[in-house]
Amino acid sequence: MSTKSIGTTGRHSGMLEADGTAKQVDMSERPSALNATDAIEMIRQGELTPDALLESCIAQIEQVDPVVNAMITRAYDRAREQAQLATQTANRGDALGPLHGLPVAIKDIQATRGIRTTYGSAAYADNIPEEDAGIVQRIREAGGIIIGKTNIPESSIGANTVNRLFGATGNPYNPDLTCGGSSGGSAVAVATHMAPLATGSDHGGSLRIPACYCGVVGYRATPGVVPNEGRSTLQTNYSVQGPMARSVSDVALLLSVIAQRDANASLDPMAFPLDANHLAQLDDVDLSGLRVAVTADLGGVLVSETIRRTFTDRMNLIAPQFGTCDWHNIDLTDAPDVDWHVRQDLFVTQYIDQASSWDAGFNPNIQATYRSALTTPMAAIASARRRQMALFQSFRSIFDDYDLVLCPGVSIPPFPWQHLNPQQIDAKPVENYMAWLALTSSLTVVGHPVVALPCGLDEQGTPFGIQVVGAMYSDQRLLSAAKALEQYFASVSILAQPTPNFDVLRRTTSTCRTEGRVTPFNV
Image 1 (cartoon, rainbow, N blue to C red):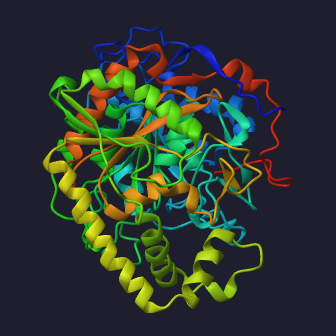
Image 2 (cartoon, rainbow, N blue to C red):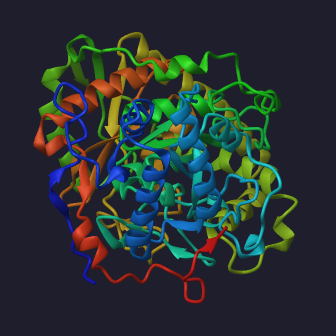
Image 3 (cartoon, rainbow, N blue to C red):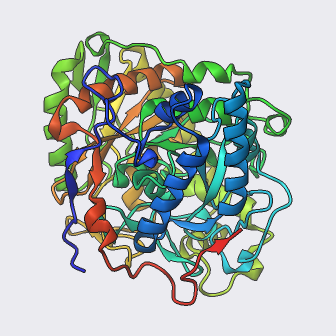
């Protein structure tokens, strides 16, 4: 298949009217296309059963996943049992949890009790955990139904979702291209209606990059909002877990569940006191009252001309909606170097007990960072950590004058997944696997919450996304503002969220799967 985009259906997702209300579409034959908030309301009103929703999602997986290779472990049997129970509970009129009967796809870095969890590595090909990760347990307790596990790069490090165990996950707008990573399988599953909700995680952009490449919403919360009892370092902006969905309201719904304070949360020293339920209660925001700072490159990090053009064109359309919208001289040009050094420190902490067992083919991104760390002077890492604090304070001060910062989500459009990373950007060499990710990794360095928001298509016909950045600890306000932006985007054709062309996608021949692993493990 050529690298030309297979395009969209000729329409956008149509899930929102211009005023943000749900579009009146007959979903009776295709419940999998429903957003989570619409589906849960229909379940509560008796207009949809969890059984029907699950079967629609399973049918979508069976039709589309052979092409894109996103759902690498399927948990149909137990999901059907849970959906039947959820239907009976709803029929009795019992109290329902916030995710009652909703299928949820889980990133394969997060342990699932009784369902295979491989971490994208052959060493764990048949690993079936006895306990859920905290994020998964909270989803189950809220009534969510685990439909399966989504593909990742090995050990979830890298912005291209490909590993030796399962092969690549293809972009739903052209399976020859990357879907981003490391939460690529989750982004593709949500974009192609395999599940209304999915989990992800974010080191240097692992929620945001695939969300932008696949035309869905990803959310990187303020560090500590979502408890992560599995972190290996006490205080860090890295290893943030978060939600993916097709709308901001759906992301906020899942966030309000996975941010709950429970016994697992108490194991994470970064999980500060929080009313998690409040995160789903989004306010109506008037865009004309917002003060917005805009930057195409955070002061000069590596960004292609095609992304600059698209971003500038979109901002020219959007800017009149705001009370204030200024191109700002934000300077995070030191952040990529800081990220590289801080990342080295973290990787030695995380992998020191495993490094001796790596074979030559183990994730080259991890190996490169680890090897670099062993030859980097401690003084260089200490200097980077001091510079990180200065960058945080400088970036934080922007929010004294502005409510939001807007910038692109990725430095280049999706490229062929056969290349682990792009080799060049506008003839400039990409020095290492992180160099092309500076738009996202630099925001990880300063730690602010970020919404990755779909914003139409790019010049090659694949999804284009922006990052909407808010002040620290302003997660509910940020999501409310992002919802208002989403509602405006839905009213302008060039800005509206796209939908894959499923008719073309189902007829596409895929080379994504690894030979010998073409049949996903079904439990």
